[in-house]
Amino acid sequence: MIKLPQDNSEINCAKCGACAPVCPVFEAEGRDSLTARGRMHLLSASSNRPSALLADMFSRCLLCGACEQVCSRQLPITQIIAHVRSRLPQPLNLSKLQQTTACIVLGMPALVEVLVKAGIGLRRIYSLPQDSGLRLKLALLEERTPAAPLPLEFSHPQTDCSYFTGCFARHLQPSIVTATTNLLKECKLTPYISADQCCCGLAAWSSGRLEQARELAKRNIEAFRETKGPILTSCASCSAHLLAYPDLFAESDPWWARAKAFAARVREFTEFFNEHLPNFTRSCRLQIFYHDPCHLRFRKNGMTTPRQLLKKTGYSILEPKDGPHCCGQGGLFHLTCPDTSAKIFAKSSLQALAANPDYITSTCSGCLIQYQQGLVAQNKKIQVVHLAILLNFSNPCTTNHVLY
Ligand code: SF4
Ligand code: SF4
Image (cartoon, rainbow, N blue to C red; front, top):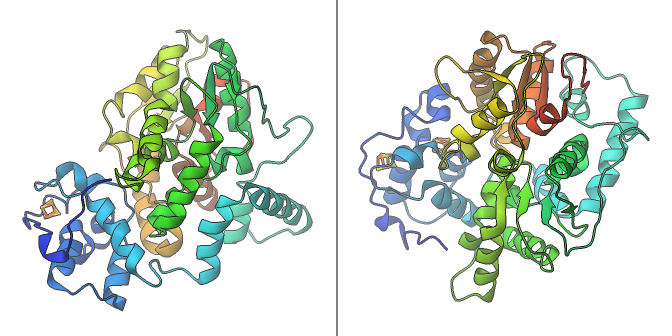
């Protein structure tokens, strides 16, 4: 578990301001109070008592981690923010219903599946207005047709590797699971996809529900207890949270050692397939815009590995003119701060569209949701697909992967 300041007086922020220019929320809103410096200042200047100001300032953070990369005091800023949220009665500007849906329901895969089917049914019956937020959300759900069944294959746990799908791929867009499973087969690997796996717990952790995050972590560790070898995940954000499982437990807790052993086996999607997939060339050179997820780009080789993978599998990459930019989704941030989220997305999507790509791709569920919804809302026809789908295209020039 990361050692956090015991009380607010121990937060020794240097007030250097290095965190401001890299903060997407500061860029969008221009308020110093919404930077890491502003939040650390409020903490060190206030008592531990929850207040409306504290709740508001601490809910307006994406937990993107950009500030931690430049912090001159190496403060564990995202951990501090999550722990402050855990002390607040209503840590995010969300209604009780939204919080329950976002955090508790995600821990119940069977219920999520029922809700997804209900959503697909609703979409078939009602023609929602073009600008309806619900229409954009329902559009994310892939149809369950005989041609695209839910592709969970439960092989024996004693297999070469395991696959942690994440909620988005498992419930909303199972074609990602099919595509990833196909890629594993190309690498001569048979994945074990445990039926007992559940939400990684990132949403619970981000909203300060630390006990719930621990429970979800324990369930996932248990779900893969009989397996050996790597645990692949196709979502960059899930991989970041699974790798951080040991931080959820004190070292004296028996679960800490189990979490550490589990995290040591977790493999992020691009790292895994860059190592295992063979090189190949394509007759048609498609131009791809790869969006860097914040949960990956700050990790070692987090920006180089996805580009290496795209190049070795025959794709040309278009780079953003001003470097990578957060998409503004931030897990629950797009619900708690929709206006700021939209401003951040406007900058990110402008960069992507200016590059004029054939496809936009990423490996983060949150980034894909933000881009798929956001570009449909802007009435742009460009396709946004998970990288696994692109890598599965034998001839993408003639393939039309329709999401909407
Ligand atoms: S985590 Fe991201 S959004 Fe939050 S303060 Fe740091 S840079 Fe800003
Ligand atoms: S970079 Fe770190 S030390 Fe500097 S102002 Fe921001 S939080 Fe404080």
